[in-house]
Image 1 (cartoon, rainbow, N blue to C red):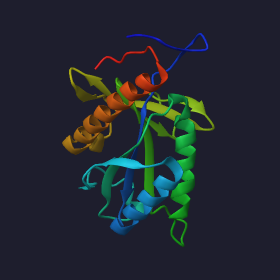
Image 2 (cartoon, helix red, strand yellow):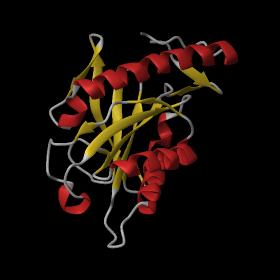
Image 3 (cartoon, rainbow, N blue to C red):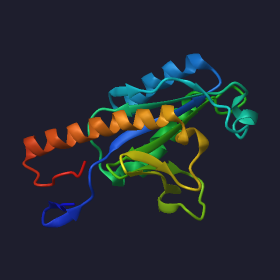
Image 4 (cartoon, rainbow, N blue to C red):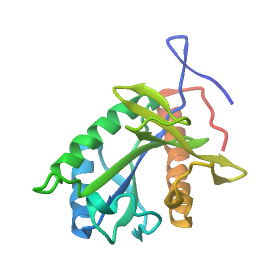
Length: 193
């Protein structure tokens, strides 16, 4: 792995922003897509929607028959933006709260690098690292031997074939974006595929 330098200092490898969406109201998913475009930019990849029947954790707040989907965004982001993305996602969720104040859409931003998927959370736990402003980072999947590998704490929906195939498509986009950036900026960093 080659080191990227900026002003003589190492910089983290660029990443791709992805967001997991969850709602029991399917019409809200398309409204959430529009809100995400306003907040984060162009969506370039969408996963198929799947039923979220892995846990009943969200049902009390969001209702039954939840649907899960993932979206990926155009371009590259720097990993130190993860806290900002989580805080912005929280503001976007508030737009969709019901009259009773309950969440109707859950938005989970994460950063896909060539090596892993890191999700943001506002809940601390033994395997999460506090970044700032009450936002924690969790390595959710590792990319090894050409596929995404779960960890003991990886959520079941992130272990599905639908999620892994979505992330592989995003990873291809990430590689293409890195190559484009290198051509435009002359960045000597060369990614390992």
